[in-house]
Image 1: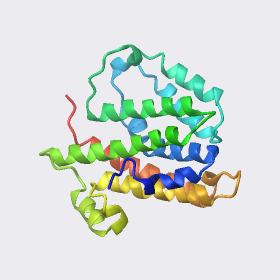
Image 2 (image 1 turned 90 degrees about the horizontal axis):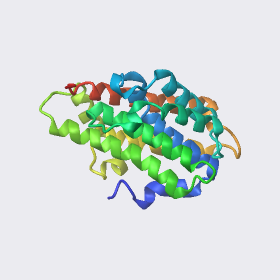
Image 3 (image 1 turned 180 degrees about the horizontal axis):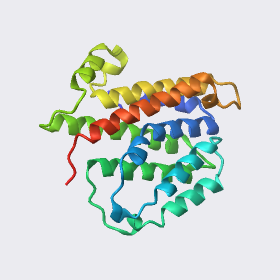
Length: 223
């Protein structure tokens, strides 16, 4: 089964309107958000934490799929950092930070159209990063805390998810992604699904997943 492009994984996206696709893409980036805010970036990147905070605040403020000048301005401010004029050979955690910033740029470029293809691209980024982390954990000789929990989760997850043959983070991401799409599609037309109690719990699920990712990334030594 192709977990990147499997038809079953994108059926929900095809049912969404522009605003709903924006919400789905935002939640994919929310699952990747923790490395940006919980792991310090290298000083030579010259990234102002306030610029990152502005990006995340503006990105969460409007989820209607329409062009967003405030988000564009936040990205423009962040893009002034020396990071964007340098050749970067990132360590593992840094690669997650760079990919997440790239995902926000993709989202800002998609607003106004927010096509299925553009939405898929951002959501697939979250899937790929989760799988990449699993492969790094499998390849290392270090013990990454939580191994027993991850194995127990995989042993008890539903058959539909286990059929992909993925590791913990990729499987867990797909589980949360599916729940995100369900909540978005179940919301009333024109409503804000993330302001409800169910929506807030969904955000918490994305954040818990992100914190688990950070915990695993921190197990890898920095040079």
